[in-house]
Length: 157
Length: 315
Image 1 (tube, chains in turn yellow, purple):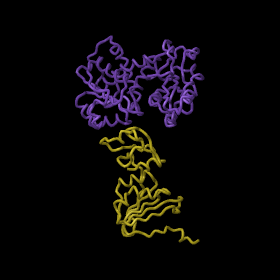
Image 2 (cartoon, each protein chain N blue to C red):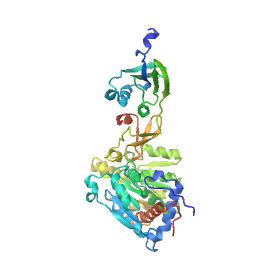
Image 3 (tube, rainbow over the protein chains, first blue to last red):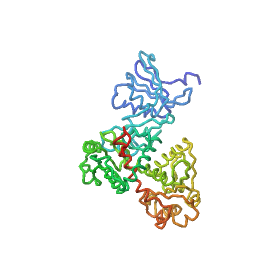
Image 4 (tube, helix red, strand yellow):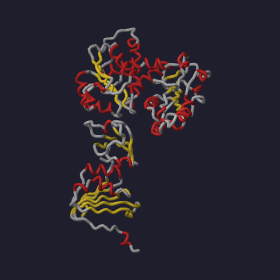
């Protein structure tokens, strides 16, 4: 097997966003978080899953013609904190940064606790404090219940 | 006495610093003669307390009301949401906005967790959490600490056994958190199925608090300074047989008190079912009725501090 066959088989994009180092198996959730299928149906989206990298297997998502906004980045870090975001312009990486879990999470996750007041018809958005980075753990500011891992991705709004 | 209390609302015991708890307990002590009717106070003359009880809790409501009346204030409120606008679908946020424009301080009891936090965001007046579902009930913890301090002359260094449903019981979780601030020796008395959750014991380890576990009362009761009993809820068990199996090791009667420490005290947040037999009530160890009575001075202290947090309480 020559080295070329191990390379990632997704062609470079002219302009857009490459979300790299997504935790293995999470690429489809990232696509869901970004709402790509609902909003950006004109964008070409390439998904690579279970790709070899120096630090083990990973997923990659490439979105053509779209730069991520901050809120979207926050969401990704909750399910895959190791993600790197590359903004591509004219086939070159214009900007590269790692996402970090925010200190606070507001409005993007609902509380898993069905008896939490934020799950009733009240005029508030659910708010969480990020209490731990690895694994990402968030604590509801209202009912004080903690959520981590799958619980967070299952409760994305 | 230098007072330390800087709270706009009382939602969770976790927001209290040790010094703030001490301030509440010191003030509660000063309130005792007023709470017992030996002295008249006009400290909160003209103030209005709104008691918004979205689920019944007779003891808690009466003690808040007694506390306000003892300090010269008055009460508005409800204890049955079926009679209120809530039934028409009003949000808690709107009910709180309305109540905070009528009253000077609000006490809220609500079946949903986090309700008090929400109320504190929408209220222009101090909100006291009187229990929100399986969430927090900070005034219970404060009156528990007050009782231990009054009866034992202090909290630090005492060996405190907490018995009953330690897995689901919110009272014991809040109490454990607060006791950790005082440096006590803890024994959690429950079968493994009802033992203290890891989340809570991890916190104790972080604080450097030593704790032991015991499956039932017999093996540990003679070593305790304080025995804190709680109710085991029948509905948590699939059948009566399972319940009896677990509950039998957590029932207290006078025979078990033969070799206990002379100054040991027994506490219970009430209501009890059959975990403390009624003959224990007549022993010198039983302090649970005194504990319930301590709800009044503790809540007086809290309301007084919240309504006058910038200055020393006038006496």
